[in-house]
Length: 172
Length: 204
Image 1: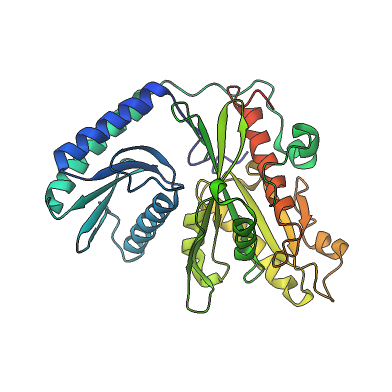
Image 2: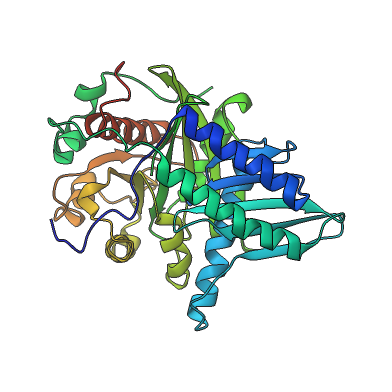
C-alpha cells in the first residue's frame, strides 16, 4: 500500500476504567468552570464521555452538529490564512457554549449559563483538555489485529456468506 | 472510525452517503427515518439551503442489533453533492467506517456520476484514506425512471473499480432498495471490524 495512505484514525476501544476517568475529569471541569454540562466528543460526532445536566442526552444529534460546526469553522479559518485555531464559542441570551480542541481527534464541549464567564470556561477548557489527553493516552493499547484478517476484497463480494442473513435494520 | 465503549456497552459506526448531486442521498435518509421506529432512531437533522439542497450534511443516528452484548449504533451522514461544497464534503467524509455512493440512473447524469466518483477518490486521498480500505456500497438510484440506464451500462461505468463493489438498486423516494443498501453496508462494516479486531463481535 502506498505509504501516503495511512488511516488518519483507528477504531477507539474505551475500557470501563478510562470511561470513568474521563467522566471524572468532566465532572471536575463542570465544577471548576461553573458549567452546566460538558462532553468529550469524537470527530465523527460521538459523545465519548459527559457530565452535568441532560442537555446532551439525545440520540447524538447535538454532538454531531457541534463536531460539524467546529470542523467547518476551523476549515474556514484555515482557508482565510489562519492556521491556529483555539476553538469557537457561542454566546446566547441564556445558554452559551464553547468548543475547544483536546487533540486532533477529540473536542471538549462546555455548556454554561449567564452565571459564568467565557474567559473562565476557556481557561478551564485548556486545562481539562490536557487532562483528557493524558487520560486517553494512558489507556491500554487496543487489541492486536487478528492474524487471519481477511482481505477487504473478499468482504465486498461475500458479505452474505460472512454474516449470514442478518438484517441490521427492518422497515416498519 | 468505530468507537467501542465498554462502559455503555455500545459500538458506534459512521456511515456516509455520498455520490452524484441530486441523486437521492437525502431521500435515502428520509426514508430510513420514516420507516424506523422512533425509539430506534434520532431526529433527522438536515442542514439545507432554501431550495432544499444539502448545505453541510444530513444526520440520522440509528440503533440496531446487539452484537455480543454491545448495542450497535450507526451514525448516518449525507454530504452535499454539488462541486462547490468540496470542502464540507471532505470534512464529513473524515473518519467514515463505510460509504454508500449514490449514483443516478438517469442516462443524462452518467457524466456526473463519474465526476462525483472521481471527486470522492480525491477526497479520500486528501483524508489519507485508501479507497480499498473502506467498505463501499454502490447504489444505483432512480431505477424507476422509464429511461433508466440498464444495469449493465451502469456497471460498465464503474468497471475500473477494484476490488469489485457491492452494488444495490433503489428508488429512494418510494423506498425500494433503501434498506437493502443500508443493510449491505452495515454487514460489510461490521464484518470488516470483526475480522480486524478480535474482541468484537464474537457472536457473528
